[in-house]
Length: 168
Image (cartoon, rainbow, N blue to C red; front, side):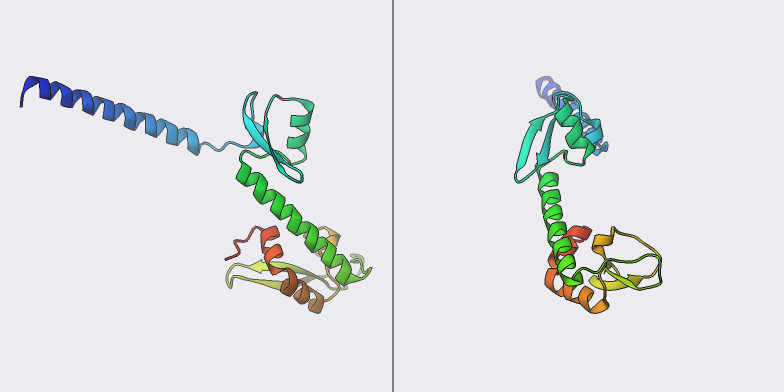
């Protein structure tokens, strides 16, 4: 092999090694968990209302308030997913109120209060009840097993979205 070819090969190997090192550094940086609590001036973030808004963090009162109420997201995808989850929750709460027809859970007695849970072993939504253990806000409890089953039948997709379950 000629000297010139040998030099070119060594230079190419050096560039390859440098590129591999740079890739490793970039992967390490990507793997560091960044949250909205790590936002710094000039970082892009997203917030949601009726639409998704792209904004630049500058630590303003608006930025701080958006983050404090859980309305700041690192990516458009996160903001879109959360907006869909909130919309599903609103539909669920509205339907539960309709089905309950004024009923409110009374935690001072042993009356059953029904709710929806996701069974990961069987990959299904199912009803559950409690008399004394409260895991949700009152607005998520139903008066009967039958109404809870009806809610699952009517809003299964929304319930899975709200619970963060992949609906396949």
